[in-house]
Structure formats: structure tokens, C-alpha cells
Length: 255
Ligand SMILES: NC(=O)c1ccc[n+]([C@@H]2O[C@H](COP(=O)([O-])OP(=O)(O)OC[C@H]3O[C@@H](n4cnc5c(N)ncnc54)[C@H](OP(=O)(O)O)[C@@H]3O)[C@@H](O)[C@H]2O)c1
Image (cartoon, rainbow, N blue to C red; front, side, top):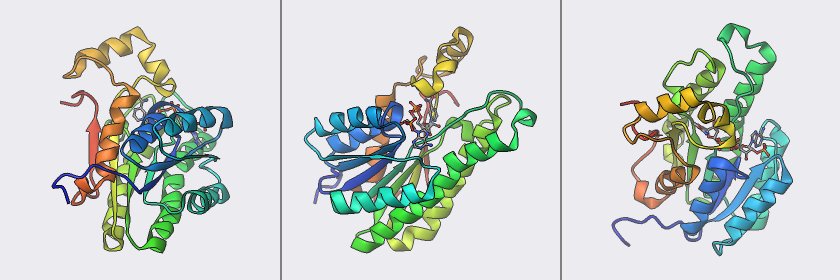
């Protein structure tokens, strides 16, 4: 056995929000490392395109239209992955949302629930289903949650999102502590500003882009493909003694 083993050959991964942006890059990265990948998101067309990109690496892909806010669809995602790809070894909880912009007192109950149900509750539920699938084959597994630097920095304009991403950092620690004895490691990444549709309002705004560029050690914002390597590492045997951790991928913005 090599001292450093980043291979995911023979593994099966699920990536939520795998149809575009960071999740699409992560799905391709996991496939490049040898995993077959089930991709979940709501819109089937983008999902099919991303599944094609995974298959282009030579690995199997399964596109499963899923709204992560629906419990039955999360259960179905794990079941279809088991039935059609054979097992579940890796789960990347990447789907996330932020429908509101403004001070926290203006976030109504519906919007608050939407953010928390998508960014936190869905991760809780899907991780529970994936854990059952990992226990079924008895070889353990690895879960990677996608938080944000917003989980560390209080925002006065996307406050509910900050609250949800902070919760995800602690959910990661709680899952890791509880499931270590199951052979399941749980870690988290916290991206900074990354050039995706989700963050367009930020990087499209000259002043925000200028501040993000000036304040980061690398003097630029990130690309979605730059998130995948950390997830491959955390999912692989190379990270076999790492659990409960959050890796900040922000080009040194918080230094
Ligand atoms: N971009 C950044 O600067 C940044 C920074 C820090 C953290 N993040 C986090 O990174 C993750 C990915 O963000 P991104 O920038 O790649 O966003 P994106 O390009 O908008 O992609 C979001 C993905 O999530 C899916 N999705 C959204 N709501 C969903 C739902 N209810 N059920 C199932 N899938 C859903 C989307 O597909 P459908 O719309 O078809 O469902 C899409 O595949 C999020 O958790 C985000 O909070 C992003």
C-alpha cells in the first residue's frame, strides 16, 4: 500500500448540487480520482450535461433529479445509487442556497426556513441515509460538507446564510464525533468567493470584486475547479486520520 493514497478507484460517490459550479467540478474531480458518481440537483438538463462530463473521464455517472428539501427524494437518491452503482462510499453535501439579501431583521420566516432546510436540514437527513448505506457494506465512508467562509464571518447582508453555514461547520463536528466508531469520517470545506452563478452578484460588482481581490493573499477570487482537489483529499485514504475538520479554501482572504 502506498504511503499516500489519493485513489478513489472502486468507490461510489454522491454529489448534491452536482450539475454546475463547485459541485460539477467536485463530481469530475472525484471521477478523475477513480470514483463512479451519482449527481443530484433539480434541473435535469444541466444534470445530464454534468453526468456526461463525468462519463468523459471513463467513470460511470448517474443523474438523479433531486430537490434536497424533499425527504423522500433524498432517500430515493441513496437507494438509486445503491441499486444502480452498487454502493455508497462518499457523500458530498454541496447543494446550497441564498435567496435573500439585506439585514437579518428583514428575513421573513419563510426565507429563513428555506435557507436552513436547504443548507442544514437536508445535510442532516441525507447524511443519515448515506450512513445507513455505508454501514450496509461495512467498509465505512467519507462525508464532505460544503460550508463557506460565511460560516466564520458575520454578514450584515446575507446573515441567514452565514448562520446556516456556521451550523454546517458544527454539524460536521457532531457527525464526525458520533460516527467515527462507524468508520465514517466527516469533514468540511469553506470556500471563499468563487466564480459561479451563485456568487455572480458579488463578483459582478466592481467594488466587491476589487475588495475581494485586494484582501486575499493570492490577489484573486477562486475558480470552481480549485475546490475539487481538497474534496478528493478528504474523501481518500490520504486523509484517513482527518475528521471533523473544516478546510478554508479562500486564497488567503481571512489572513
Ligand atoms: N460560489 C461561491 O462563492 C461560494 C462560496 C462559499 C460557499 N459556496 C457554497 O458552495 C456550494 C455550491 O455553490 P455554487 O457556487 O457552485 O452554486 P451554483 O453554481 O448556483 O450551483 C448550485 C448547485 O446546487 C443545486 N441546488 C440548489 N438548490 C438545490 C435544491 N433545493 N436541491 C437540489 N439541488 C439544489 C443547483 O442545481 P438546481 O438549481 O438545478 O437544483 C446547482 O447544481 C453551495 O453550498 C454554496 O453555499 C459557494
